Length: 444
Image (tube, rainbow, N blue to C red; front, side, top):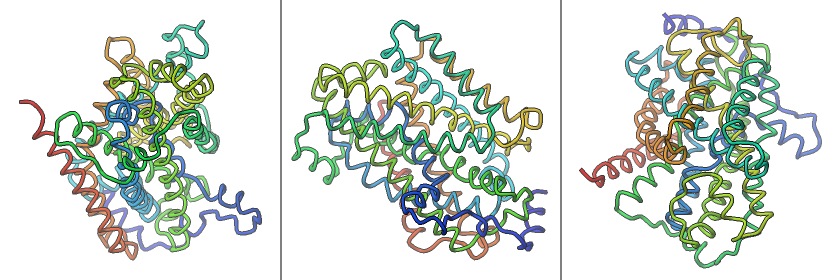
């Protein structure tokens, strides 16, 4: 039914999302103009950097030898997120809705269930990391109380806050990631080792390294980001007054150009922060012989004797700030996917009474994630293996995304440029190959 409705409405062109996307042409201050242009792409990129997890574990376990992954994943994640943004802008639908309209339901349901489980575990681990870091700054408050308080605060923001408020909150919160970059100025580095680790790929064909590589790819090019990017394009269109599907369908080259700038800026920011997290932990934890991180508090507290009080403070604030960004996006993207798969009313713009199932899905994800911290599961291990699961789940989903974005019946005149296809399909192949290599090297 949705596919028929999509085809019936596709010919309507009176108002297009892409034609009304705001671009501050009248703004003379270039920095203000650039900041106004940034939106879903920046937020998506910033949310990709979990408070403490895969990147920190990679730096602690392998030092600078995984720095090169930040460079090669930049074009990969940029292309994928731009393609997801384009799908949302052209179809006026979230990614799950597009999959439901054009592909077998069992494929969608498998992806959605796996996504919901992975996002819930990820959100729970992030809640624990934030509480641990906050406990270092406020030691008089017990961690269990901090976890519950943070969870309730973020849930209230999603349920009772308007979409405009949430989008503005997310956008400004991306600045918290600068604390990771600032921390590096308090860490002693060997320039030769940094350059070598950054420019010369180092790959070991053993299970620990390959699982870390898959986890890095799964964290950087993560399924929840695909859904979130497309869904936010739809939300942005509705915020601008395009409430009907036919109003949101279609886009323009100018709008795609603007969104490309947004996505490039967001993914560049994400990868710079990723690079610095690996750099900091490689220069401190790895050199100190702490190759296995067991908690966020441990990672932050170790910086104090190694890099000083200010570095410790900045790193702890980075964990807290990015957690406040990542957790709502994880739970919301899971709820978007589930709601679209089962035809529920959804969207952060809606009041609770009009989208109860959507907000219930967010609440369940938040609550179950929180419980992970109380049932004896190590949140850092859970975060790492969730990233591995994402690295395995992403390749088949990437293949579907590339097929959708090259389907003229769906995308019209906005199918992919050949260069986009080369990078997109190469990304899919690399992630498939990494996952297969990891499984082959795992002990049987």
